[in-house]
Image 1 (tube, one colour):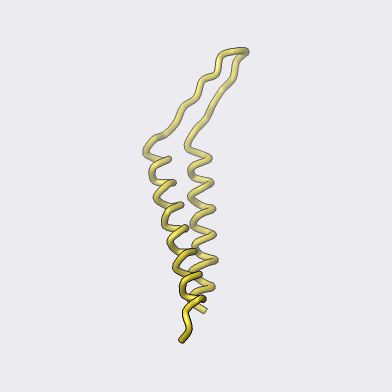
Image 2 (cartoon, rainbow, N blue to C red; image 1 turned 60 degrees about the horizontal axis):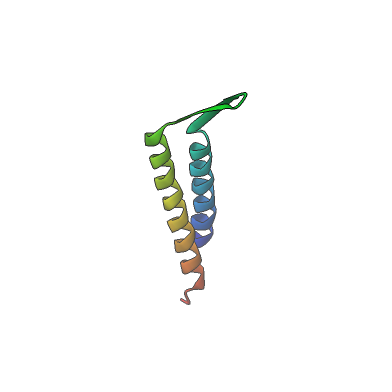
Length: 68
């Protein structure tokens, strides 16, 4: 039961981090001019959240492969 919770929770946390990363930048195009603004603090937090999600998924998969 715990491995399933870890895998599903890791996927949810990873998706949350991905959406936070996607929302951390904005760009505007006017003709040939392209202006982009990024929030560096928000993107670094998003990478940390994605990393936590990856570790949760790896931990869940590791727990399912163990024999008790």
